[in-house]
Amino acid sequence: MANYELLKDIEKYGRDNKIPILLDDTLEYILNILKQIKPKRILEIGTAIGFSALCFSKYLSDDGRIDTIEIESLRVEQALENIKKVGVEDKIRVLEGDALEILPYLHEEYDFVFIDASKGKYNEFFAHATRLCKKGGYIIADNVLYKGMVMSDYNKHKQRTAVNKLREFIDMVLKNENLKSELLDIGDGIIVSIMINK
Image (cartoon, rainbow, N blue to C red):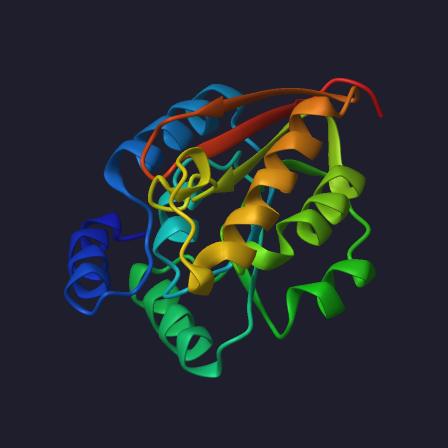
């Protein structure tokens, strides 16, 4: 039996240690979608310590599974430990490595794809997400407003590349005619797409 009570401790650990985990309102929004669609397959790009994948796993259909990709070995270790603690090893598969090297080898269809990894690579991640997402499925990219910088004139040199890439990414997604997409000012900004043509 899965022990989802432990999620509170995992969340606290993430926040206390400044590990990027989902903001409450973003999580609530996503979980409402998952409750409705009861996904069989979820793909997550960016595992961190496994908090979001664990939250998502509550709403999988009976034989559902999550594939989640993480590049940092320490995070993979922590995620596997948390998944084991909660008792859902049968529901979550952690794939270790660079997502852009792993994604080309994935070929099954997913009902829901969540992107929360390196902001500079969102365009490439999204290209794979649209290939792997089934018709009627959802793709959500997190942190697309990048602490408000994407929609403001704020343009420090250090963040300029990431901000410009995210602006291009948002524009590209909103113009994609195979998707019904919406940019929402929830958390640090999310873009929600439904695959309408395949």
